[in-house]
Length: 499
Ligand code: CMP
Image 1 (cartoon, helix red, strand yellow):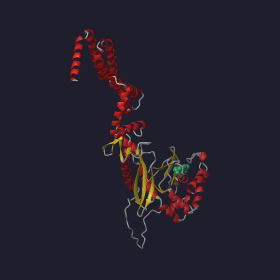
Image 2 (tube, protein in one colour):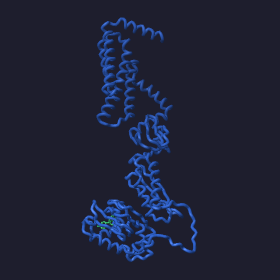
Image 3 (cartoon, rainbow, N blue to C red):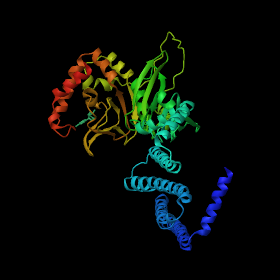
Image 4 (cartoon, rainbow, N blue to C red):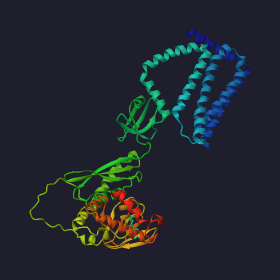
């Protein structure tokens, strides 16, 4: 065997010396031209910032041209038994580099990225390159060793079967990786969860998908494990993450006050997404506390923990501001003599309000107990036009100004009320209400109002009268559309909500 190689080497040396001088010069010139082109391209890439991958294509194209020229001009005149194999090997290598640089440079870098501005599917390009590489190698082997394609296929099928059997898992992962690339159930940068492992996708390769957990650990999940388990993609269809926070408040604080504090707390959190809207609901009522659930959305999956922290901190401060103590287990000792609680007496004001006329003091007291007493500094916007809120405000102190599009519709004093339209009809707020001076209001929510309706049917008649008076306000002054301005329609809507 060794002698054969030594003999071949001798023959090449002999060939080199026996070559015609013109042929040697031609080959030298070709080599020199190739080196010169490479240097020029290198300088252009550095100085002009030309794309290196596409320049590589130009370089290999030029070399392919030189080899073809050399083949026809010089090498065809030499002994083919000596030249054939090295020439095929050289051509295979150069054509493969040419095709590869075409795919990476011209197609992917220039056409897809720079012209079409599309994201490149590297996995698919790798598959295509791999396929072409196999074809190039097989055709080179066929022409060097003169192998029949059918025998090559048979032997490669046996080889594939052996390899396939011993690498079942790896091949399964590669096929799954291929399917992931085709179906795209997730992409790089998205948050996913597979078989209890949660993280941000950092890389998708042939065999595995790399995710980075919240603790910054990297986990390599084999692609076939992803296709076997349930996959959750937190970024689709929307990147927002729905969050839930539970807080407790003492049973004796009316829900309307707690909810007002919670809603205000949510508005103060920059990490709470405006859409989908947040809401608060009562989860349970226990022996000493009412548990409230706050539902809100963080803008992205990874913001959820910071958003929850922000919401809970804000809730703590707003509970202080709204006078909602934190609940704690306690036992009460009832003394025989009742101590009268020091509480402002709202009853005279409530009695003077037409909407509540005919109600007994017991009804009004129940209303006070299930409502919230809130204070507003001068200039505070108590109600905002367009908001979907359903509380009724009874003015206990101060003056408020009802405004629409910057013009004042009315100014209301203690004993007046506002917000009844949204409470009774379920429509969005029709005007802004701003505290003109420091103001205090009793805030009645829909539940408390419902209770009032059930305990005294007289309120229904008061509402009908209230709507009639509103409808009589000149169109435009009441903040309503003239065609909508029909008291019976509001009354029908009220009936559908409260019946
Ligand atoms: P609502 O639509 O729930 O919220 C804004 C409130 O402003 C509205 O209910 C009424 O209570 C009040 N409002 C609207 N127009 C007038 C008006 N012309 N005079 C007095 N109050 C008004």
